[in-house]
Length: 72
Image 1 (tube, rainbow, N blue to C red):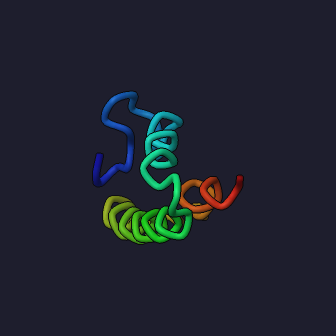
Image 2 (cartoon, rainbow, N blue to C red; image 1 turned 90 degrees about the vertical axis):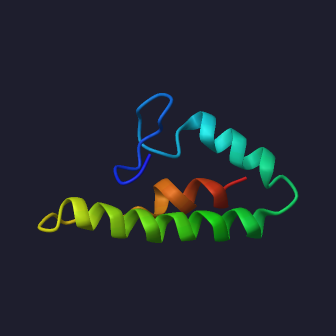
């Protein structure tokens, strides 16, 4: 759910566990595609979150968006 990047179903930070499972299923045979998709999502989230909190320092979003998808 943009611009807060929380899951619309459970309300926790996206991607939640259920979203990760869905993404892994969708990109089962295309890990590079998953990483590309998540890197783009991270860029969008960074822009949205900066707009919401222009004076705040954002944490590193890489583990949240890309880090989990790199692991196997």
